[in-house]
Image (cartoon, rainbow, N blue to C red; front, side, top):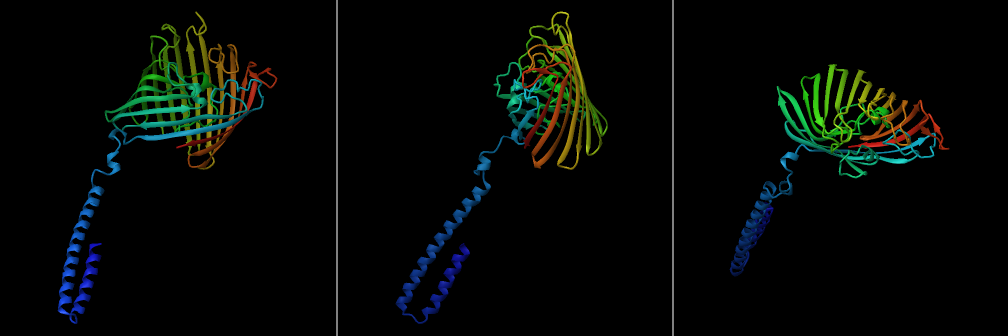
Length: 418
């Protein structure tokens, strides 16, 4: 800008000098005075331009920028925010009179559109030092997984909320969690943006054989690349506030002998009955994962539980189940999935008074699930599945409110994760 102004003035001077040769001396003196005034004005304008440029430079480089004034605290620099929204619609071929998918929890409403879940996660996973994680969930899932003693409503659940401390022990990571976190047991999970289940509906083993969450302290140590050990102490099964004075112990181990084989075993031991520290509940769960080729993944789960005096003094309860899973990727977007399962509630302690049932029923349950999923858009997955449930007792219902031994469902779901 200054160079342009100076050039214009110089050109003006040159024109005036050419004209002065033929002008009257008095007029020449007048022109000279005007030129001097123009020079003074030009000098003042240059000073103002210099001052303006200094201000722009200071603002550009200095601490007054909004990005600097509102800079996030250092501990939030590695914070990640993720989440998911899941909706589905299902059809129960029995058209049950009570409008319930019997023995289903996250999708209990038959022939209905459902907001399965909306979830948002704030997570800082530290390389070393302090981190944290909180998972907020709304929808039908939140109504099911709510822990005893939690202050959240039926419509929203704080699925996880823990502080994570990471240290290096013999150059290997040691993580300590303190708060509320999901269980170690079972092959399936409560839906998570980075780790959601292959099938739309959850297995009988997930609903009735294992807990959902725990509140306490957990330590995880990756001893080698192929061995990870976990130990913890918590308030018990699905309890933010304990119902007795005892605590439940947990342990887990993950072994990967070769790259395509992983075995994860978990164990729980503790008193779970209200105001009773003497009667113990035991659970062991083992999940074997195989990936023989890039496009195929297989899983097998075996779970066994036992509780002393669960049905009264001297009346212990046992339950057990096994499930097999397969996922085959046709291409990078399209997958085929299947699950077959068996659950033996041999004393009726686990499925007692479940949705659609009014009394404890000793039963054996079978399930077959077949489905497919397709990535419609990055993060957006469409899924459809057929599921057959069967019991050796008449625990399901038809349109006439009569008890029958099976039910068949077709479910369509859309899942968006970010």
